[in-house]
Image (cartoon, rainbow, N blue to C red; front, side, top):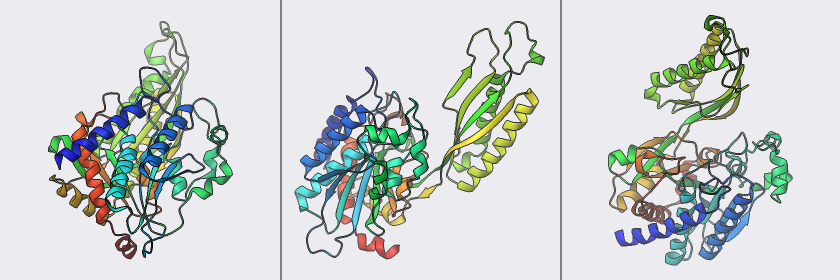
Length: 423
């Protein structure tokens, strides 16, 4: 067993390293949605799918699909198991986030073809292009379309380089009017499963390579603007300043305090992006724009916390003589993973000699969007130090191989009729 796992893991590592060479920047990995690098990566993934024996297509939002038809004459001919993840990255990224899930799906499906030819149900391997939201101020565009919930208003969103999504799609040789055709028909998808690195330290602390995801956290994002008054850094007394940055710093600490006070809900709060003007060392900042990312396992607690945080931000602004306004830019509700799919992954982990650790995901995933279409399940894979969204991101060959083998075992025992009966 371990020899086969190591062989599959080495294949996965080689494919990951090949994909990691496709980047917009020398010396670091940056691959954003609808860029030439996305096109290159999508073409490489499509080639791997074709070599595996899958029928390849690409939808109107650039999601690459590799399809394995069901064995002929089966009752489940219209039922499909969807396996997916993403091939876009954050800026200065690690190599494993998202891409390993796509590669695991390709390798597992290849083994299914070698052993069985086909299953009594269809299999689609999906490679989404916009899970990270690093280029446009939105995320999960491809998976939202697959689930039939794409918001046409997103077509007017501008990228960080000033291009509207609709125009970026056209430059990518896609037709925005064809987006509705990306959706699966109701009842066509029996389930969606995703293999993903954990991006946290729980599995490493437990000494286990694989884990079963119980739920995906809710999250909300805001853009916060603080406006004060510029002034000379040497002549305006501290008590008379309207310093936008000092107000922002106090707001950041308020966010940290609030998230720490809700640790039982796995709540986390982050200010990940900030811009300051006028931006001179001898001038009091007059304007700050920063982002807030707030996540929790509970939608209700997250909403309560954000309401309290908004009130505190306004109080800080009033006390410091600055003005502020808060604009919501993104929201995703918490999504539980299907109990039967959790049980299937737990059994697959046990079949590889592991102990199934059950844990929630604080990160967002394409599975959140697919929950509107069908039951979802996720398999987590240990990553060193829990580090992700960082060039130091690393998952061992052994753990990747065991994850592929667990996915193969899961597919072999998957029964879409049981899922249909539940739902």
